[in-house]
Amino acid sequence: MGVQITPSILNADFAALGAEVARIPGADWVHVDVMDNHFVPNLTFGATMVEALARSTDLPLDVHLMIEDVDRHAAGFVEAGAGSVTFHVEAARAPVRLAREIRSAGARASMALRPATPVEPYEDLLGELDMLLLMTVEPGFGGQGFLELVLPKLRRARAMVERHGLQTWLQVDGGVSLDTIAQCAEAGADVFVAGSAVYSADDPDRMVADLRAAAEA
Ligand code: DX5
Ligand code: ZN
Image 1 (cartoon, protein in one colour):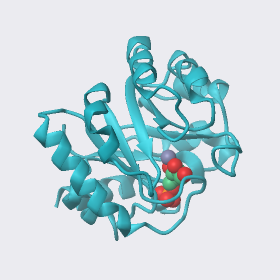
Image 2 (cartoon, rainbow, N blue to C red; image 1 turned 180 degrees about the vertical axis):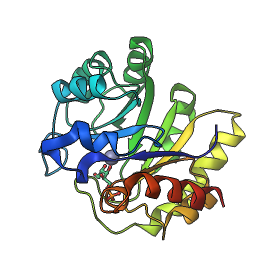
Image 3 (cartoon, helix red, strand yellow; image 1 turned 120 degrees about the vertical axis):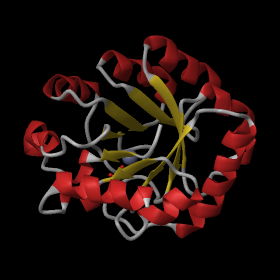
Image 4 (cartoon, helix red, strand yellow; image 1 turned 60 degrees about the vertical axis):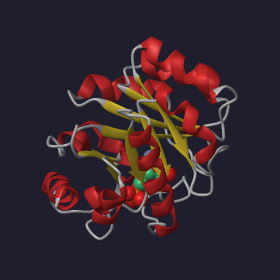
């Protein structure tokens, strides 16, 4: 699998989400940020909205859960139609059980780490995951500055994936733009979330193509 671009709709027009998603036909996934006002200080939408979005597009949904008590809620997002479900390890009680539950419910299982959460304790868990998300901002809001301090962790995560011969995708999320995507690709990321970069562009689909070209360069 090569470079994948997954625009976040967090900075899209929430009153017209179906139309906003239709503006990015060249994307690989649609990144859906679910926030509960507890794990992060912001509130977005839940499984009902995910279900409506799934009906509105042929693109697969990459659902990023920034919620407490995620062990109880993750499977509901698979039922709602998510193709990939990401939980935060900081919020999960039993990450191995949860990853297995997401997979057996029929979605790709993914685990996220906040910028200050180390990757080393989870090396043996990588085989349970279809994707590892390394946050490159503190989760909660779009439009924040990219945290370069995450790049060494990304390199170490890429080395772990290679060492174990795994296919686990490595995703970055936060501050990804034409200015920062090449460094992420160079450090080993292969799945790139971009929110404000895509939805503040005059032509979001063109930005998706430009980001892809910059990551492949
Ligand atoms: C932040 C979200 C991101 C956000 C990224 O907590 O997880 O997906 O939408 O937005 P940008 O690309 O603007 O940093
Ligand atoms: Zn996200």
